[in-house]
Image 1 (tube, rainbow, N blue to C red):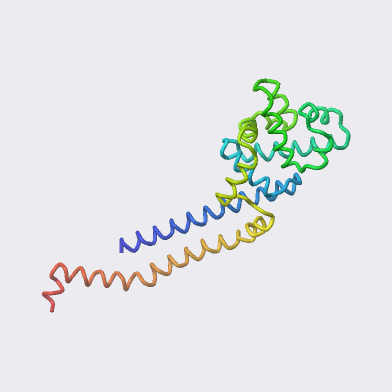
Image 2: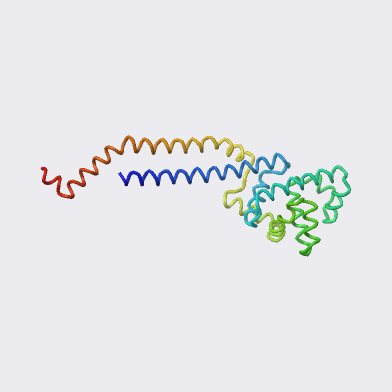
Length: 220
């Protein structure tokens, strides 16, 4: 009986971990999908930036907030806002860059431009001007992108299976119900195992135990 309980517990833990990993991946994909919808950045670029943020110990929230602010500044600068346009021009980013790059690509461009500047208050001020309050928190990530390069991050994301496409986002959304159903099925299997098979298994164990202790032999 104790063995059955232990087996049921291990089975439940294994399934729980599987569902937990699956849900975690789905939540990340869902977050990248929503961020893409809010900013217009490509999902693939966002999935790479998310990996760089993770490796740089920058939160997904800071990345999202910074990208949303950058997209707004990009839109304002493209529409002729002098203040925002100057902030980009100070980094050597042209109006053509602003019109042809999506916010994800622009994020990488800004990181590369910032990397050419010396560390200090001025660099932090530019980051805050373009990314809002999240700018200071994004500096480790921006430095990583500027130093190691975006292409290297893309290769790493693909190697780890973390590079996302629009189709993968839709698949992840569709998988949510399936993952929950797996958990329900596992619970049902565990319950049926204990309530159905357990009595017969327990009886068998008791017979074996009697034989081993000599009780069964004496009764024959």
